[in-house]
Length: 340
Image 1 (spheres, rainbow, N blue to C red):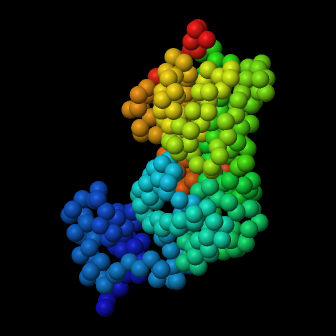
Image 2 (image 1 turned 90 degrees about the vertical axis):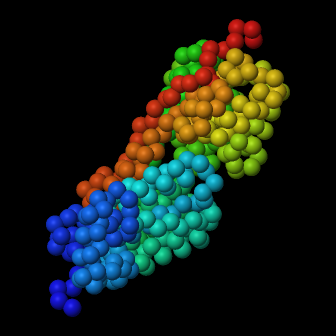
Image 3 (image 1 turned 135 degrees about the vertical axis):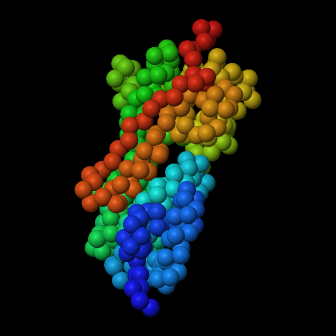
């Protein structure tokens, strides 16, 4: 066969098209002009080219794969992040491959080794539970495969991307203080993980900045199980409703727990926000449509995913990327009732 094609980039050069366009046409993605797609497929067929991801890796030392390591898909916001990330990876002309670990260090380590073996362009991890000196991370570094850790659970010296959780909790507490709240219940937030500790420290720092004592102004409602779901929020709200000297507002670890808390409060005869204000975290889609609609923090997940991917693809990207969150004020927060 004359003039065979060995790569997507080579085919793109011959056709005078971008590698991104050729890659999407070959993989049948939408958003490509039908005539352009037909031209790409015809040229590939004539040249006898069929893109082999692993084959390209053997020839060039890298594949077009971006490895993604995630603990599970139960967390709503993680699922959304993965969906956004997949689209961004495809738009950049790469392919995402996901490995779930069920929060197991051994499974996460095995996933990293698998991605190293198949010569991924880079690896993105979510809520990593591996320490900075773990052999899995070290072997990626030795292979010169960049690994960006998104919201790692342990302190690390690697490349990190995340939301500024100290700022998120400052926004949360300042909003409640501005409404007149001075007694705050905290659902599901503790200092057992790196990002949990950031939120814990952010809450206590915001109290002190307002001239309030964290010991007197904050009441912590810990989870019996390590779940951040609707049921846990509802259960904690029942405990909250029967507490002596009940706080006038609740801060939750995420929107699912906030929605569960609202349900639990209502079941115990408390109105939101007349009796208790509730504020969440994530700005999940449903937060704008529940009753009352939920005041929450938007951690800017789409921006975070773009920044994390940029650090994989750009050798000049900084070693850390931090997104600034925003406060979304809706119906679930108000001034405390004067009847109390």
